[in-house]
Image 1 (cartoon, each protein chain N blue to C red):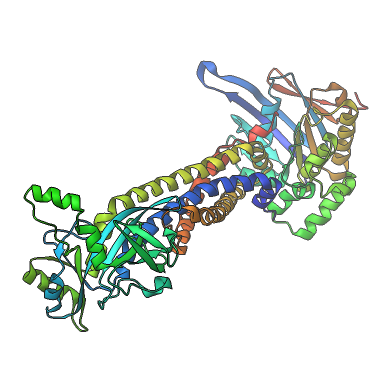
Image 2 (image 1 turned 180 degrees about the horizontal axis):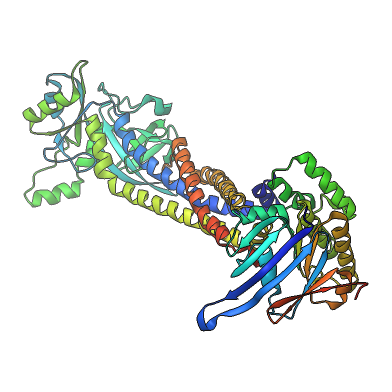
Length: 381
Length: 234
């Protein structure tokens, strides 16, 4: 048997490939959009995941420190450490900065942590150069995407900090690069006012600032203790809001990035629908171009099934080629995006199935045209 | 065994209803024997294409009876379950232009129908080789239709019509796109085919100079069909 689809495709191969690549670029955008969503979810989880804490204690009646501002006293960490089931506790601060390096403007999240504490804040696997902070002052660990090198001095506030470590893949929930400094330096940067501000405050009757605030207390639970039970108990005794690691992660996903991810999700669905419509239109147009041949085939006795199979096979080949070129396009361009784009195999496979099924549905337009074509059109010129 | 290739009895075709009803063919009767070369002649709009489409089971008549070989295909209603299969197995078509499938090469264009009929590769190859030898086109098997001249393509179209060993071939002005010399050559070839392959060819034509090559001429006059037997080219 002669495969009509194969013959038709090879007869106008370049035209077919260009069409497939054009549809592929569209699918590539769909793949990138899914990657943007995955990247957003990944980034939202990476910070909480890197900090090896089981419990987050924040200001009462807040959803801090990421979804809402939270300020608690640093010495709360001692109170927490005495609680049943707590192994370690420490204080932590978060603050965003706008920085410029070598003409490149970017936003960072500064994390202040106790370098002498026992809770790991910087994931050692992500430390690719240098070391973690070992002194109380003027040391900085930066994400490599900031462009700073080991030993370089960086001005933050009124002081210069020496870069002692470089990390990779460390970002905040909003995709900003992470930089780390000691808790003391971070408190000065966040809570200590300038002399002018202090004088101005004093004239208003406001007495001094409190540099011993932090944004959250983090803690690890002892083996055999359930983090949720410990968290609820701390809530009852300290009048603070306490989240487990899982609750904090869920909070980030549900409160912080929910709208953005929904927006991207909706945009992706629209793009998929547009792609399906475009594939359907292309197949319909390709069928219209062959309408004379189809009427001849029908007139000489070729069954609708054989002709319809040609349309379906061509649609499937178009879908597969478009999918391959779309993936290649997506992988080619994602490196240039400023935020993380996660291209996962499972998403690609899911999209592949959707495109295959949609392609078959799209080919129905062409098949409808085949069935409706009157074989008599071939007679009489 | 009957020698009749096609028989038409009291065949009528009307379009529209009520006041807008137009009758094109009315009470047509004729029968053609196997191996006859017949031309169908009528002024434009007289119903040549309509008759050809009814004979090809593409257009449903209003009433009457059509018998192809020994099979009654229409008797006031279609008697065949699958008109496409009937055409595939019993009828060949030749058109004004060659209408070969442009994305298939010459060999594939010719073998498409026999393959669709489920015939074996060996049988099809032998038959197609024979036809192509007969039409002196064997060296063009792997060419694409776009690489051949109009006359060559028309011969390939004839080969395609012969490939499924039909009882009748319906040719819709097969010489219309050819110059006089090539037209005569094609008509002579069609006549030879009717003799040697024992197939009946009904050829629609406007060109009266081709009529002497035919065995019979069907005239559509006042919605009826007159059959004129051609003897000694007259």
